[in-house]
Amino acid sequence: MLRSEDIRRFEERLKVERDAIESRIAANKRGVQETVRDESGVGDFEDEANLLSEREAEIDENARDREELAQVNRALERIAQGTYGHSEVSGKPIPIERLEALPHATTLVDERPPKRP
Image 1: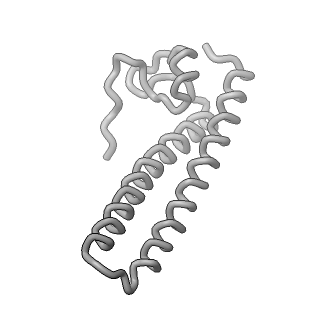
Image 2: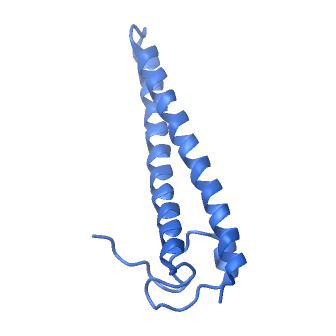
C-alpha cells in the first residue's frame, strides 16, 4: 500500500515528467515549422527527401510524446481520484518497484492493459 508521502513523491515526479514532455512537444513543433519554412525553394530531390525524412521522424517522436503525455496526465488524474497505485484491471496494488520504474503504470506486469474506446 502506498503511503501519502509516496503518492506526493510520484505526483511531483509525474508533474516534472509532464512538463518535460510538453517542452519536447513545443520544441518539436517549432522544429517542424522551421523545416517547412526552410523547405521553400529547396534545390534537388535528395534535399527534399532528407527534409521529408526529418519531418517524419519529428512527427513520429511527437506522436510518442503525446501518447506518453496522455499516460502521465491519466496517472495524475488517478492521484486526484485516489485510485493511483492500483491496477485498472484487477484493482490490486501495483508494487512500488513497478511505479518507481514506470510512474504512470496502470496495471500489474502480468495484466493486459484495458482496451480504450
